[in-house]
Image 1 (tube, rainbow, N blue to C red):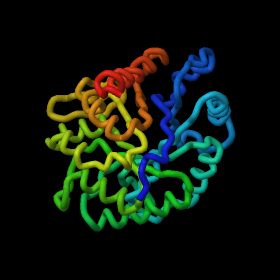
Image 2: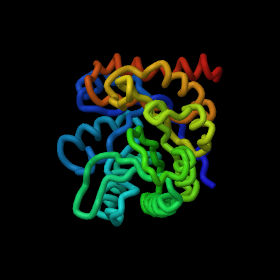
Image 3: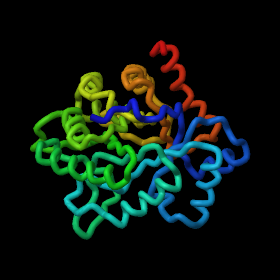
Length: 278
């Protein structure tokens, strides 16, 4: 059984975004690592790759994807996977993650992270595909939990049981998004701490944090504001149970200057040192 003891601990990072390139290249900030969206760099030539090469000269880089759509009722896209693998060789990413979702139908790609039905049939289907992907990429592969807004009438179990069953059957890892747990707990009215208790923390190789927008009747995973206190509190409970895996702040709209974004990410150190007593 795979566990996260084999996974490097990189510290605290942020998502690499073009809005921050000028500050990063001029200041060379003391940041632990960057996460990139794989699909933004799969063309191994051009300006995007030139910028990435500048980053790779100084910082560790981890790849995170949005287009795999592992649960879709379509064959695995081998052209996409070959390009993805080529990029992993370029970045030397220690692991790669994508989302536990679907987003394709024959002849259509919705470019959205759509939730799956929580059934045994879907567990078996997704787990086999995830096993194949990890074997092909030849690096640790993780699936991320979604922020969700709808549920299926055929669901047979809560999300955390479904998520656990997929990664354990495939013998892969979890990329645990703590903000998504909170968002989904509000939207579906479950206990976020029960979710945490139901997840095998030894399978978690990375944690995501982000800000959300509270609309009262629902919560939106907007990635455009500071992490809420409720999410930081959950992080303080999750992180020590993982053995101290790498933590990443996502910020994807209404960008702050780089220094302010990095300052927000560094709040994780407070919860690691003070709240977690580690």
